[in-house]
Amino acid sequence: MNTFFDVLETRSPDARERALMAALPQQIANAQKNTTAFGKLLVGVDASTITSRQALAKLPVTRKSDLHDLQKVGQPNDVFGGFSALLRGPKMPRLFSSPGPVYEPEGTARDYWRAGRAMYAAGFRPGDLAHNSFSYHMTPGAFIMESGLHAVGCTVFPAGIGQTEQQLEAITALRPDGYAGTPSFLRILVEKAQETGADISSMKKGLVGGEAFPPSLRDWFTARGMTVYQCYATADLGLIAYETESRQGLVIDEGVIVEIVRPGTDDPVAEGEVGELVVTTLNPDYPLIRFGTGDLSAVLPGHCPTGRTNSRIKGWMGRADQTVKIRGMFVHPGQVAAIARRFPEVIKARLVVSGEMANDSMHFQVEAASGHDGLDQKISDAIRDVTKLRGTVEMLAPGSLPNDGKVIEDARSYK
Image (cartoon, rainbow, N blue to C red; front, top):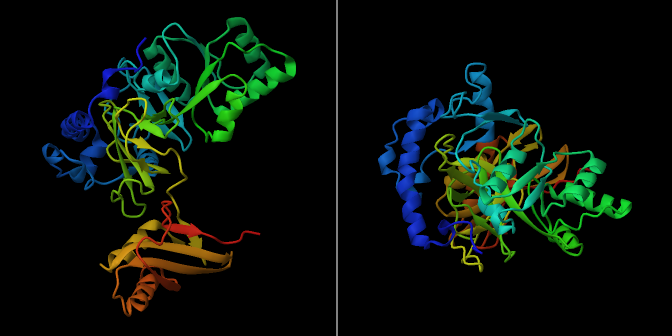
């Protein structure tokens, strides 16, 4: 039996990078030509020159809020806001709505969401029956999982959400091999089965997503005879990364280019540093270029012990949107970056908001090279100029600030 879903998972890192960088200018040209949104966002960009990560990093980041705003403007003529290369009809069998609302198209490609690798890594094999408890209503979660299961060669029972007793009845009768859905609902099923005596022992494996999956819950399932893995996917991008039996981070999928950038600047950070996960998908139907997920993560060093050679991320580490309201004024990471950019001596900066609501204070922590006499006062003046608020400045040695991706830390008491 094959150990891997396909040969792409084990190609050399150099071969992968060459293939991705060869595909990148083609995808950018496709986005410019076939979507009105990127035709405007990337106007003047010569796609043929975007053949490296350094060149890619110079392009603007598009975020979910941008999708929402442009989709709202485009209704009813274009509910996708100009980001989809597909038109309704045979090439778009479904379209979905995620909270916002944000609308996403689905194309006809096999394993359109690329979830097959995650399913295979979780132990699903041809002929397995999977109990899919993601919602089949409006959002694409269930279809992301289902398409991946079909790519592996599995049969799917479309259970959806709710109706716990009926789902347990179906599990008892059909004897599925594994589960797909959220970890919280799987726990509900297991606990209800223990309470009622329902036999769900056939479900030995699972792939979960859509929620945090802490090691304590993973071990809880293991103690009850289920080996459960997690994946990281979004309705816009499909699969981004997936867990393997090594349990050492999440392996990045073969169909995306991942960057970790500093909130507020959108500049790539060094390997291991926490920042926002920005993804470029190679999906020609929905060609999102430098799409900011709003989630924090970091790249792990080395490769997966299972033999998969793509880079790994730590997984979900919080949200990147750290905008706060201080004394009636919004302060966002971009303003922190704007202050830091004024001073070449500044290596890294962090704004800490402390005190109590309505009686709060700003404390600007700065890592800087030696020889910064008077720099703290200049930074203090810049804080007031940029934010219209007063803040104190603390000068720190390089490497003093924690590596947690935070540009703004809200340490206020909300009692």
